Image (cartoon, rainbow, N blue to C red; front, side):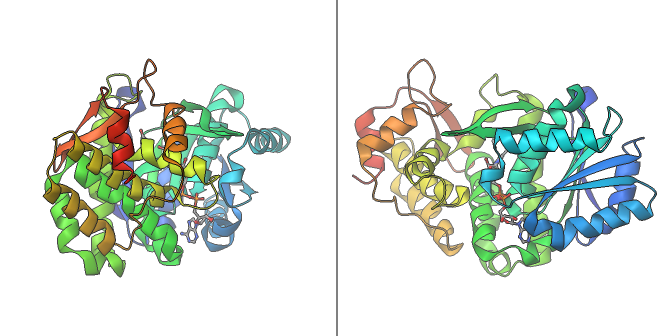
Length: 363
Ligand code: NAD
Ligand code: GLY
């Protein structure tokens, strides 16, 4: 079967790879893998929801294409990104005869992608790895760029690696089964790309609210393609987040991680926290004279049109600031924030007054 989507290329020397973005192209998975791997053994890692919807059928397709397939299913949800789950996967892979020639195929959202990528990066000192992202968040963000990892109790994404996939296959049709709330959470990351890197894309989102809200296939493909290209451009220049450029992808995230930690990681979806966090970051930029009120209002209008939350939860401001200090993005004890100075452009800012941070929380 021929390639059935458009290709976005991530150029990283010997770690370069294609992101194929299409509609209905999951059926071409065997061909996609075969073009990029000589292996004949695929370990598909998925979760309990995605297994019945897609992964089980994909396993059958690979078997029909003469692959030996093992399908490993973890519980759906963030609690599968834990060391004990990774341990179980390593053990099962060993028992089922995986070796250095095996490949790992992650079929699922960001949880499965991060976990399966971490298992691939570590089993037998590293296996080739493919991503088949099935949430909007995973299609526009987590499946691209090679950040893989698991959580420690109380420390999200604390153990991990940079382990680029050999290819990413995106089928926007799978978003039809994604729960509405998960879809909206992914849209927060989509808006993020417009604010941080592309004013024209932000304007596109403003002009296509109805299509986005009704999951129009053309709008979905355009959004995913643009976000993957923007992320690829950043990752190509700063793969390991050394120069600081890759940190722009964390717009709104210092606030968001504090909201998620304060709510115990089970009340808010990551994208919901990012939506509120982007509003705080925009207000903080306004407090510092970097953007005007119209900028903040414009971002708020788009987030509200996409039915995303914008109100800071009722946590104590001091507790939130303490949580922000514990975030991985603290540098030499200083809080750093990704702040806009105009639509489509942000900077990493270190000298931020705590009073302004508290004010940006609306306190
Ligand atoms: P998720 O993987 O938990 O998926 C959300 C829910 O949707 C799950 O219940 C899942 O079973 C279900 N689901 C997935 N695809 C479906 C489909 N097509 N139809 C129906 N249900 C479906 O959550 P997520 O938002 O995709 O990912 C969140 C994770 O991503 C977090 O752990 C976060 O740390 C990580 N992340 C990683 C990066 C990175 O660069 N590696 C970036 C952002 C987020
Ligand atoms: N999601 C942030 C990054 O990939 O760097």
